[in-house]
Image (cartoon, rainbow, N blue to C red; front, top):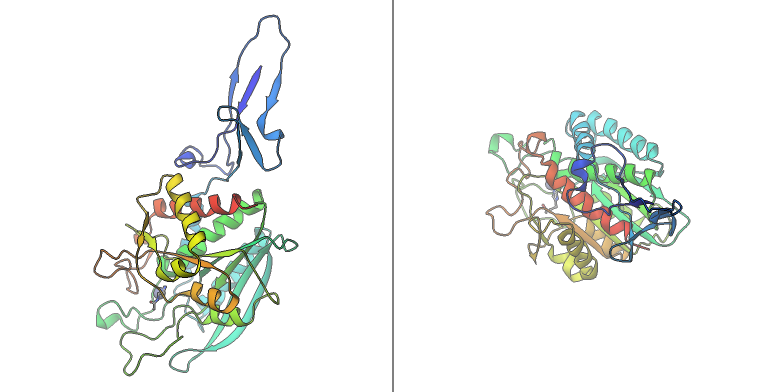
Length: 353
Ligand code: AHN
Ligand code: ZN
């Protein structure tokens, strides 16, 4: 008979799978003398799963994340130039992102808002939201910020007023989510997904600012959405925020605020990463606590939201050395990091029922 094995997604599977087909098929032919030919196909037994003959368990088919694709989406964003609100690069990139979500089959919502920065500058902001399967109440929120910082205030003083490419800080999370959107178009998960690109996250009070610290100057787009979501009373089971998920030598420690407010989700994500073989990147120890978009998702919408963010408490800066410097560009993006994060998030959402 013909035996068709559908291998389940695991680390390294994508290496042999540069094309768009998430599955590879191996055919084994066994001849049975004097018997009729039998054909069996495991995947026909369940809608969303394949039967694994060897373990006799039903597993969900998780698509293979393509890091080359995510990388290309990151590059494209940086080619517009720094996506600082009130610039042409920002406007053009916003159009690109909305079109991409639409091309991947999402129902796209745009939120335009004029938001006041720490210094009174009015930022013409746009949150871009891609909705999949709007009918179901079983929803997961995936988010990242798409703007880039107007200041390299962690670099030499002469660069403090130079806007950054934000290849890692901004574009990486969006690039991974665009690749996930592409995968969703090819094979939908069992739940509804909302992809939110928050604007005006990174116009927060700079280190060179004279005077007192001002609260809530970061994450302006997320604060707006939290008070005024794209659908009234928007709810999701949980959220995952991707922030700086493409830097070389990235380490993802448990983030403090996520630990206190979304511990069960955090555990689920880190367990998935370890199961897939990414225990070198996803460290099951506490890192730092961040003021980031997830804080407002949680506080304003009461959705437990985890921040996957590159912050290593064992380094001097904590964040990647390129953080808020002019070196946050394509040269410092690592596809292996994108792969680990993207595959882990896919694993989590395709295992939700
Ligand atoms: C602050 O830097 C205050 N919070 C980390 C959030 C962030 C900034 N993510 C990217 N840039
Ligand atoms: Zn930043």
